[in-house]
Image (cartoon, rainbow, N blue to C red):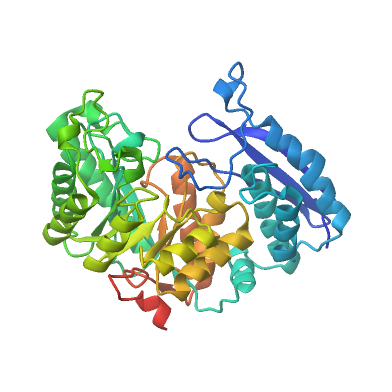
Length: 442
């Protein structure tokens, strides 16, 4: 079945910024996709095309991207006569129509909208759930693996107005026996953390950030980690929950050093630290707290620090700004032994086929793969299907609060209810130092 009509429009993401939505039609009906948008973006990401007209939507309008779907991508896709089940050929066509290495001409946001809508249409054409269609595209057979969620519950960095340099502190219910139980553990600990923070810092400290996490006025990472430990203990889940960090350190990398006081305009350059000193700080946290994963511990081009740390650590080191879901960057990271984990963000690369390729390339070197949302999200749930399809066993899509985050978790609950013989990943999706994830060894 081919595409009969494609129509894009501008809608809004969870931050009130414009984004792209695509409606794609076949004889089976209408298939809708909406595209997310990041705040702390890597310089090597595919281009999110914005209008740049400061007089409208603060320069963030997407009418150019929408127009590119309606006048180029849609018409050419219809003209090609490709079947909606031919995802790889469709994505190759979209990439070719753009013709740039970073999708800068038509926009990764325009291309991704069409790519996701085609996945939805392809699943309907085959009469199977989206996760099954994606698994078949990736050559992956059941039993399906339900992921361990990584709940971002304390926010810092560019996402928050506190002094905290590190961007995300996450809870991973690795000790759960099912995704449903992981949600129970996660939500109960989230509510307990809310009480702990409220008692210590006051009621205004539990306002939520872009991803549903809290941004209390803590002095630094130690204080945040202590809050998590207290909440885990009070909720009764000691030993069942591990901790992950997303440092997003490219945000505070200055002149070859790291400034942990970067939100202070009068930050003292004498106190900025080297990559090696920062690595030692992480290692001290790993010794003291149940940390199993650290994302973007160093700047996206500070390869030396990455390689040094990965060699000396026993946890999962995840590349996000470093690798930007781009097979070329992942290859370089593999060669340099720079990390052992990939953050998979579909809008960093711009098509579903390239996202699958990126995940499989990372896994070929024994990496863990964590499928991820963006800080600017929509109610679209394709990443829930993708993580089950790829069987990577890890997803981060915010705190268990705010509907655009919970939509993904709810989609996973539905999938778990449907698949019956699925297994819950627990900690088996995580790499640890030189040890590949247990899921990869099955």
